[in-house]
Amino acid sequence: MNAIQLVLVVFSCFGFGAAVARFRRGRLSRAQLLIWSLLWAGIVAVVLRPETASFLARRLGVGRGADVVVYLAVAALFYLQFRLFSRLEDHERQITALTRELALKDIKEPPHGR
Amino acid sequence: MEKRVIVIPAYNEERTIAEAVRGALQVADLVLVVDDGSSDRTSEIAASSGAVVARHAVNRGLGGALGTGLAGALRLGADLIATMDADGQHRPEDAKRALDRLSAGDADFVIGSRMLERKGNMPVRRRLAQLLGNALTFLLFRRWVSDSQSGLRAMTRAAAERIEIRSSRMEVSSEFVKEVVDKRLRLAEVPIEAVYTAYSLSKGQSFLVGLQTAFKLVLHKLLD
Ligand SMILES: Nc1nc2c(ncn2[C@@H]2O[C@H](COP(=O)(O)OP(=O)(O)O)[C@@H](O)[C@H]2O)c(=O)[nH]1
Ligand SMILES: [Mg+2]
Image (cartoon, rainbow over all chains, first blue to last red; front, side, top):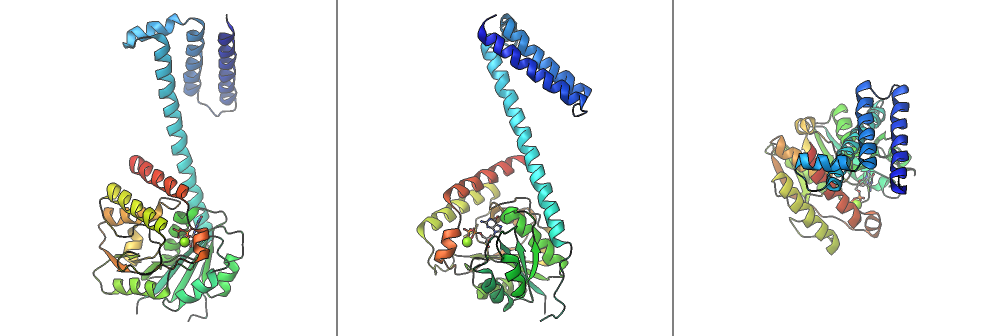
């Protein structure tokens, strides 16, 4: 095993560990844990046996194994970025709604009038 | 006569808010200042100048403040609502003109445009930003207005009830145009004069904010 493989495998173990920890705390459903486990296991497989990626590449009709890995990674990052953005927008709107309700809770017309 | 409420969004405007409130009170029955989480004395000064004050516990941006202003004006029983800036850029008589335009009955929403009569002293860079704003607003929402970024506008109660403000920051000006188009409101423009004091220019929006605003507009167009 060369250095880069070692780093990536250790990194994946941390990723897997984090997913398990979240599952234990009830923050991840069983299905989500399964998806993350498969993802990290897939990464370890490709890192240790790059042929797997080449096999996948042939099946998908993309030239090289390394290319498939990059394509999938970019797609995954895009997806995560998009989800993060939508979540953030949702939170922004919720905070605004909350702030608004608090601000308007006890406004009233000045009694003296004009 | 109809009950006229002027909404003034204000973020750290303690130096100008008193004059803005007093001016607005001359042409409206009620002035509602939305203090957008200021860290200065904006709220106190607005209240002692005679405004009703709604205070955001945290800063939400111009869009958030205007949304609160419209909701508050409706709760206070407004028939006609105008919005104007707190930094002294808008003249009360222009707010009155926008409100009067609604009383004529053939418009639901009025934009106070700095471009109809080219008075005032609008700096070239502001003019350029405004043109870009107009162009983007037209591209996204298919309606040309001569001043899409104006902070002086007026609307009827019925219009305010239908308009939904989702954006939190400066993109709100274009969002108003979007809502006018989507809800098939009748739009009119009246000429106003914008006053560019050294104060308002020092506080005004930078080029970067303009870019962020454009980015948000495009993104929201794609997402919702
Ligand atoms: N800059 C800024 N202005 C806000 C905010 N919330 C409310 N406002 C008010 O929105 C109005 C317009 O803001 P300004 O920065 O002068 O924008 P400009 O006139 O378009 O350059 C002023 O009355 C501000 O006090 C905020 O979060 N940021
Ligand atoms: Mg200004």
